[in-house]
Length: 238
Image 1 (tube, rainbow, N blue to C red):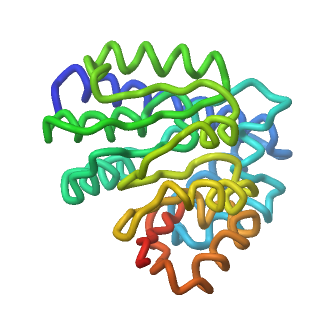
Image 2 (image 1 turned 60 degrees about the vertical axis):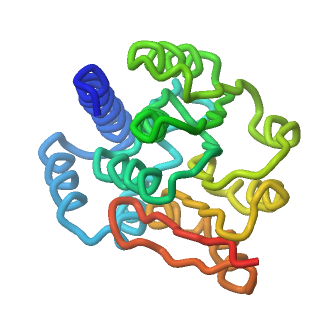
């Protein structure tokens, strides 16, 4: 990656972490000491246990970005970002569909990989006007405009207007909307298309219908990658 992009991503990761910790602290009913202890425990436990761990304390990853609250960036972690970048470099997709781009951290990882390959585009979708403004600014700062097609508005309406096929899809919207959204994008997939979905552990109950749908349909081969917040890795077979 170029130095400006690396510096930008480092700043965005730190901003996202600071925002999320502040929101979680505001929701946590306890002392600062107890909260710091909770944060240390969360970092130490296995990824697949983190969703249940949050629920024990009345917290949820969805709560951190509720419609009623101020919007958070909810950026993917550096580890997940590196995974997304490597997926692009290995699969060499011509078209990527990103469902829920937020402020563009994952978008930057996708687009930077496409720039390395010298081809391709990521269609970035986001409904929040403030986030779209920040996303555009980040893409422009990184000099990645040629590799990003930004679509503002309701994700279901955006998807309904798309045509052609996508080689790779990344789902990171409201967890309880995963299945409905996936069924809407099935027409945009081809055999060999890769579909990645975040938060399979941190939003375990909400994403279960989506997981069951993939598991029980022979058209898809899927597995949950056991790192970070849990990433569902599905391949379209037929």
